[in-house]
Image (cartoon, rainbow, N blue to C red; front, top):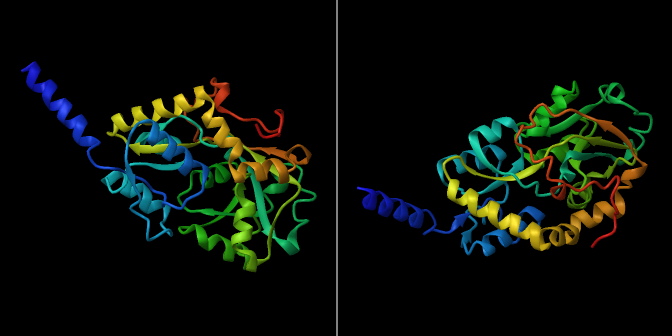
Length: 284
C-alpha cells in the first residue's frame, strides 16, 4: 500500500509539471515581475507559455478566475488577506515594497492640485481613480478617501482626462511610462505628495498548487542570496526612473494604514524591502 501511494504521488508530481507553466504576461513583457518570474522558472528548470499572447487587454477579474480554474498557473498582484485566503502567495515582495509608495497622475493643467495638501484630511477633499477589483482600492476607501472605479485599467486614463476623478495613484515605478503611453491625454505626475502604505506585490498560484509555490519560493530565495534579484531590481528601467525622477525625499509623506495586510507579511526580513527614503538611491 505504501509503495502504491508513493508511486501515485510521484506520478502526480511528474504530471503537475509535464505541461509548461502558464503565465499571465506576454513574451514581450519588459516589466520587473515578468523578468523575475522568467528567471525563477529558469532556475527551477521549468518551461512556460503565455496564454494571453494575442490579447494583452485582460481584466484583473479574468486573471483571478483563470488561475482558479487552471487556465493560468501564475499571476502577480498587490496582496490582500482575501487574495492570500483564496490563492497561495509567494511571500517575496517583487518591487521590494516600492508599490506601497504611490504618486498621483494628474492632468497637466492641475499640476498644482496637491501643492497645499499636507495631510489625510486635505486628501479627503479629492477623488482618486482605481481598478474596481484592485486591493489598493480597498486601502484607499478604508482610509476614508473618495474613489471612482472601473473594471478595465486602460479606462482610467481617459476618465482622468475627462474629469471623472481628480488623481490616479500609481506605484512610484509606474506613472512615467504610463504618461508616455497616453501622451495625447496631457497628463503629468504630481510633484508634491507621496502616499505610503505597506502593500507588497507577490506572485500567486492556485491554493492547491503547493509544488509550484515551493519551486518559485526556492528559486526567488536563491536569487536573493546570490544577488541576482537585487541586480535585476536596480537594473529595471522603471526603478531607475523612480530613483532619478521621483524626488522622494522632497515630498510630503501621507501615511495610510493597510487593513488588508496579512500577519504572514515578511516584515522581519529586511533584505526583502527597499527604503528609498533612507537608503542610497544610486543603482548597484
